[in-house]
Length: 278
Length: 278
Image (cartoon, rainbow over all chains, first blue to last red; front, side):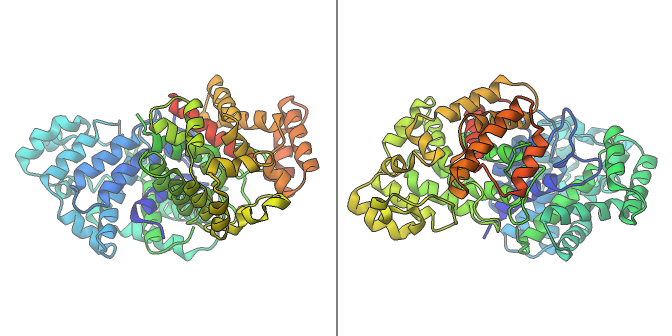
């Protein structure tokens, strides 16, 4: 029986191994400066922090920050920030013996101002592509990293509060405040299929990509591009476009639906926790 | 800075990710029942045991057995038994701050009868393809697993003694009693090249395969097949055969030069310990 920590690390590895996952690094595709090996090293480095997330006596925020710091010990840059953020409450809930997704929702509810501070500090370790903050929240820009800590404390914001503000434009924050609905749907999709786990996860990825715009593509490009990606993912699942053509085009244009990949990592963890065999 | 344990786990992951590695599971090739995902799960499960190997206060043999037990928590069977056996003295030596390969040689010299007992017990966790033992050593057949323990204790054999007996027909045992010469050569080859680490490791694999017969191929098939594989690996490095043709043929015939892959895992660990960047 794998432990919760092992399932979390394995979820990160299975996610990046799943192919084809158009636009994202996978076993068959990589970018010159962001390679498969960087994701392997990211998952290796994240493990100590994942272990802290699985220890209910450790504050959630600092455990998350520890995972991000470890993940960042490789030269590819941000590999799994979003995936680790999504895993954080899921891992904590499973480690407590609570059921999903309710238990993870309770973890979110219980986050503190200190957790928000640690979350901001995690941005000191790695460059993460994010949206501009709303005009009335410039002092909460996550790109400030730990420089935003005084504003967080002044406003008395918990980590749940912080993510609630970003939920509209960030698919991972939306999971935190939306009962992990798409993460659980990904787990269901993975469990409902047969065959190698990495094939099942790749299919779940395409389904998720076809269902909603990827918020990371909106951030890095624009909403029109994200809609095009969504509609073409639907065409691929309908058999109207070849997945290889779609994948090649996204890599050529540097379009990287990273939020959807993060959701697959979360779905893999949920499925593994429920007993998915590898 | 990655820890020694992290370097060991990353070495297992980079090894299986390195492609093309003709005949072995890699990012691009797998067998229906022994897939890339099984190696990922094997590396995840091995970590606790690798941590025990990095703790000089833990007996080497039981730490190794722990790593094998964890590695075996997946449905593909034996994924990294040989690699973990090769890593064991290397990890212990680096964790002690000793230089390689001398420090690993000292670890080998210091093994005990209890270490040999734990080594045999490790075979209870997983089926490992091995040669018939010599006629005068039938009671030492590793396939007996822990049933061989009375004979080990009667004969007073240390783990170094046990591996010394197999060194002629087993490339990993040969490293244990031969100052890790090919492992260090693999590390040198990886360090001497440029580019993605997984490309460098794949080249090192071909060099090793061209230099000596793979003992796992001898065990699973015969010496003639192993020589053919060695000579064709040389032809590939000389540009006389396409690596893809060679790889496809080995997979079709179920020829799996697993010992050479294990040496690459060891070489990756040595290179990472010396500061190889990922």
